[in-house]
Image (cartoon, rainbow, N blue to C red):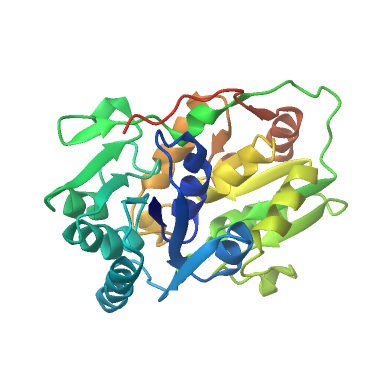
Length: 312
């Protein structure tokens, strides 16, 4: 048995890593297919990985190049199953795998609260690729509900005497999209004595006198989150999921397309979904203040002892 697990770096990869143990069948030998980044190298350390060409959103030339890599891998390794949570890596691998007779499963990202992504709509039209969603609210005959990656977590005990001495701020690594509104607000409200790790991606923080890092390896970022008093993040699934896994109750601030911070407004939906589950606090930059950060520092999250298997 050989299984191809394909996901673009960031939230898609983080989801698939955390869904792997809930897949309802034996995977056998696993080969990962993703682009090489600090996150993917750290998260997949010790795993068998086929590194793909970096593929920004809607970059068709990269998608075609990666389809050729996937085709060569399918010919050489003869996979029995291929599973993906998106985005570009799903388009490059699942149709190719299906043409080789491989059982192919696409699990739409938890980022898509109200309906499928463009990737999902394209894959749903490809014969033989089985499509699943993580929300019952929009499941149908094409998109079968499989369960959610967030089903593996629940609110933990409250720490009444928690204070904010250390913080992690993580804005993701999507090229071309800065998040100046959040950095500006944090610069205003964070006391000088708070020790902050800034993972800033495309946001330039030099004008604030902040030493930001474009990307932080997953192992280092996860360790920093687990020791921080509070985590503030853009409302990307990967960043939110990492904070929740670390036991933190993150403060999630959604990027907005009308400010040029993302391609659409799905982060607003993610933040609200996690707030409704009690796993995070959702707010706008204007609503963020020290009392909100202190409240989040008092809250925790824990893993569910036996999360349900995915329904594939």
